[in-house]
Image (cartoon, rainbow, N blue to C red; front, side):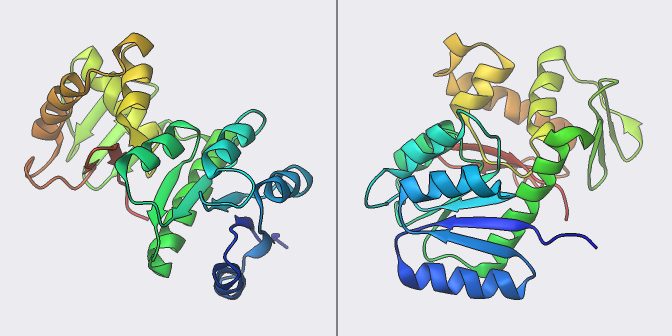
Length: 231
């Protein structure tokens, strides 16, 4: 019998903890809760959850610090839920190791979708990583460096492929401009956002039906990009 996926919720709002425990338990998750950052770190170490849902405004530690401390020893997916809406807060959380960010109030179906993406990415990272990523008519062979659209090969430059491969390998995750620039180019290039936008435009022209209304390479204004595949 397959064990239930385990989610740890770290949030200091009792009503949020109660609601998420009830909803996620009904969706067949095992749920642990913590009201403080230090408690959450201890539970993460003791229980090894499959996904962590984290609030940034904790009474003892800032959630960004919790992310950074978790990333010192685990790659468990972290989904931030926060009332903080500023781009700066989102970028800080994501650059500190969070995989995704939802602003309160949030829709439960959207949260469940983000959890599914986080679980999928975690499974891939633990050894069953896909070498071929598909999204609609797109097929991206990460090992063979081949991209097809409607079964016809698409010619990409080396940099275009490296950018697409990084996005596709992290499908569903919200990646910041700085993270993409550091991974695809060089850590010294993390502020060259316009450079990144040029390459994103080139990829969309080659891969999207309508580059002005993209379906696969989505922009999160002021933060970064997300490559979308269908559930």
